[in-house]
Length: 162
Image 1 (cartoon, helix red, strand yellow):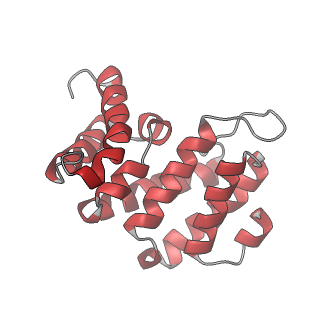
Image 2 (cartoon, helix red, strand yellow):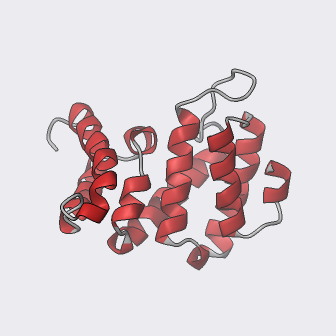
Image 3 (cartoon, helix red, strand yellow):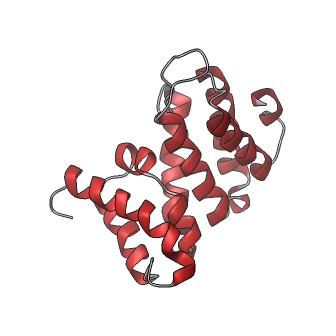
């Protein structure tokens, strides 16, 4: 899968990243290859990153960081210069698109991404967007409320001023 990421478009690489996270089949090298390709796509095709794709990638990163790779090694999206650069660019894209996020996009975000990678002001902006959407008030959005509540609880523990 990771080898396929090298020459594919944003949606396909997002699918690969989600599959690696879901199947626990990742190795750090696979993640490095995928994140390097996503970094390249952020630089060369930034419009190909939609709110859905960004939230799916963030959710996959959260899932990846909370589990071990297939060989028991710890995985991280922030190891090495290229991955760190990807995280910086990806955060910027997330906040560029945040006003366009809908309930399901916010619901895909998880503590495994928000806590290690977002600052206090960024977390406040994210929670403000959830409040704007009145996340959880409509019956069709109730499932996303649990995810954003976990993000909020973790944000308040990490940053008591939120």
